[in-house]
Image 1 (tube, rainbow, N blue to C red):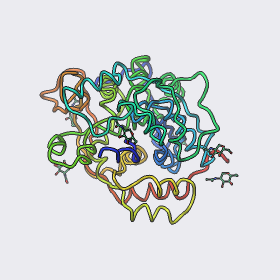
Image 2 (image 1 turned 30 degrees about the horizontal axis):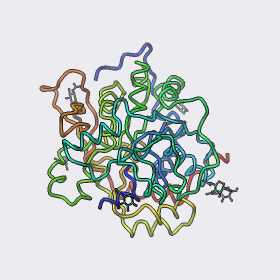
Image 3 (image 1 turned 30 degrees about the vertical axis):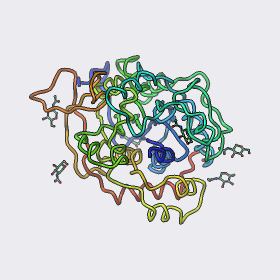
Image 4 (image 1 turned 90 degrees about the horizontal axis):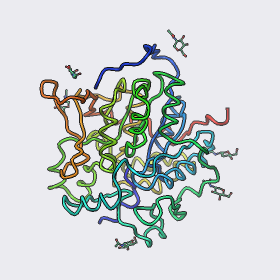
Length: 373
Ligand SMILES: *[C@@H]1O[C@H](CO)[C@@H](O)[C@H](O)[C@H]1NC(C)=O
Ligand SMILES: *[C@@H]1O[C@H](CO)[C@@H](O)[C@H](O)[C@H]1NC(C)=O
Ligand SMILES: *[C@@H]1O[C@H](CO)[C@@H](O)[C@H](O)[C@H]1NC(C)=O
Ligand SMILES: *[C@@H]1O[C@H](CO)[C@@H](O)[C@H](O)[C@H]1NC(C)=O
Ligand SMILES: *[C@@H]1O[C@H](CO)[C@@H](O)[C@H](O)[C@H]1NC(C)=O
Ligand SMILES: *[C@@H]1O[C@H](CO)[C@@H](O)[C@H](O)[C@H]1NC(C)=O
């Protein structure tokens, strides 16, 4: 997700696995949630727990900030709800090939993004005032001032990395592990490349990001609208997005344009805060009303695909030409005109907004307690 707080500053191949997977739709569901966790980024994991999905781990992605800081947010936001039995696992610090310098050089040629995520220029003053780290001297630095939720007392799992953990878990529970992506796709791409059975052994990939045909909004909209329609999760690591979106997951669901459908409003934040707990307090005080429920939309679709009321099956690829103004943006095709190596994804156009809002509200007001049982 983008940070709610600091954007204010701007002012397919077929599945070929060794043995066929027996699918049982009523079987227990597992998920690994890969995201650039933040002070108010916890709603997706609360929604998954509320739906009875067992979260095998929260893995950390460099996207809005560096992955280590994001992992600390994951730990802290679990801790405030007594959810520390959910493991947190570090991801890759750098995208496959992108770096802050390379990204900033691209911006010199193709124009700046309103929200630049972890690749925004280093600003020591902003970090001292509570901004999550961007660019700068040490990607593993932790900026304590950013922990609105409290600084974590728990720690990430020792000796494990997101990509290898994902691989281990899909072999343990073949066909049952949903992979959720709310940040850059680096860890998922690494898992795809490390183990050619990884994607086909997962249940699915569900992604926040992947806007189609939004260039005019970037031109004629406000800077905020341009921000809502720029694909930072994919643009942080375009090569990883391409690897993930063309891998042979049994299904891929893309929450791109639809992620902008359900806007946060003060009325809804007030409604959530009718029940007081550490999560509703953070949402009420810090979620803000500038942005839609991006990551929550993707999680809603993971929990219940019937949340989608209109979707299109399209073949999808990611532009990985560094010289392109669309570097890191998706491109869609029909079968008659497809290049090799692309595959169909479910591109959701519209969701049931009221149902998403009730999922969000219930999960925040009455957080599940899987650790106490
Ligand atoms: C499917 O999974 C459920 C829950 O684990 C189990 O009760 C049921 O027997 C399974 N059905 C089949 C056909 O394997
Ligand atoms: C960690 O413990 C300290 C001291 O008890 C507390 O102030 C802080 O809020 C705790 N962190 C979280 C995320 O709960
Ligand atoms: C966490 O556990 C403590 C101690 O049992 C309890 O006081 C607190 O209300 C719990 N917090 C939440 C958010 O459930
Ligand atoms: C750095 O952050 C501070 C505090 O948010 C802000 O006032 C200042 O303009 C920023 N500097 C640059 C160069 O963006
Ligand atoms: C579904 O969405 C597509 C793309 O936005 C639109 O063209 C189509 O009219 C919609 N279908 C229905 C039944 O609303
Ligand atoms: C993609 O999906 C469409 C619609 O379901 C189908 O007609 C087409 O054959 C699929 N193409 C490929 C390459 O799988």
